[in-house]
Image 1 (cartoon, helix red, strand yellow):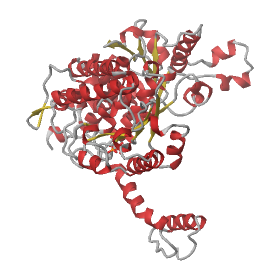
Image 2: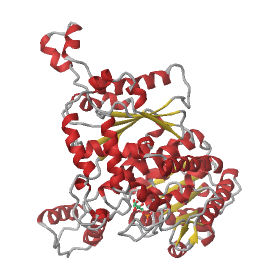
Image 3: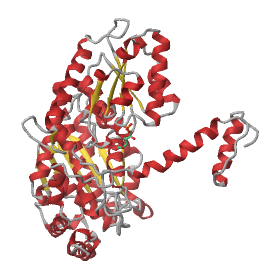
Image 4: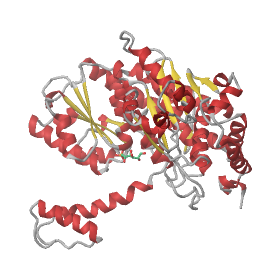
Length: 549
Ligand code: G6Q
């Protein structure tokens, strides 16, 4: 077996980590902090204005040394270079993975298939900026002469989660006189509720679809087209009320949208890595081109840090390696992402796709079954609401749940003591998880003996805290890039393709087979398993298609 195809579990560093885990599994954070008064500052790193405190993790210097050694043995440095240089590291789709080119400054040159892609990226950004300014100034008019005030993004998965997350995250910077809504689900309720109360004359649809064939998006886009044509009864309705973001101009034009109203991107941008491409058109309209460019600059700063910093001082690498430590050695199944910032309310949902679609894989790059656990489950909610619901399980349950706390020193909406109270809660939760409360401490408070076990916190529950100055567009870019690269770090070590998503295909194919069975008349032969047959029969009966099924 060549060194490159060696499973990570065979690497010397992995073996050493297994042995090291034996000595770490019962060591308590209380002891680790007591042994090293400087720990809180030593296990912290700052880059591009992002401060990562990882001291409340169940690690020592030796853990970090071995994890970095593992990254080295698995060729992380070469893989980073391969990604940034546009090599086709998405092997199953034979594509380069170049979301980092989307935020490359104009002076840089990145060649893919013999072409420098940076000028193309900036040409699209300029076109987006021009269009956004026309919308924001009211210059862009609908077919009846009214300016577009309602911006509706129709898209799903990577063509929705990024835009909606960024819109919510940067709402503070957004134009409040424009309405932004997002339609993704094929559930008709999504369309009906999003369009409720909106005037077609003032509505602009952005059809966001890399492929322009996605069932949900094309169904919603057709419904929108029907709605506009029916409501406005105007021949110019489509060209003034629809634009598209896609790599498939042919299909867009066939749909009826003018070719000049298409904002392009490229096959080397994965859906879940595309919020900073033209897929972010709604974001740019909301916050303006200058803020959008500031966001790209934030992404780029984190890219450069990831590309150049030694792994022991490299935020995305460290985050990825710490996640791997719990996933593969402690057997942790999940990671909780807990932003103490209301504007980041969609950030956990965004991260779910980024992390789980990227690293939820069961075979390696060369098709062999993986020999270790891959991507953990990501979940979360903004604090402090979670404290009054699921934190109980994190504090006193039987599962180990590493947490990522995210906070900002400066509030965007200063209001009395609110921000200090919010951040006090973040710091307190991380402290409580790490150090807990011993039975002796509980008893010393005069708690009756029978209650002591219930009120004891064993602690030793790991967390990392990510602290930034303020939630600006640049800060959001840094945060997203931090997670993108931490996912890449893990995927590299597990030797999986973090950039494909074949797991979504089977359900799509089966749905395509079932659709005609739900819509067929009386005679319909069902050839599924007995459970699926019974469910379809029951549905058909309820819909009045009683016979023959
Ligand atoms: C993301 C996935 C997926 C994709 C959607 C939408 O990485 O590829 O979530 O973004 O299926 O695809 P289209 O943009 O092609 O409609």
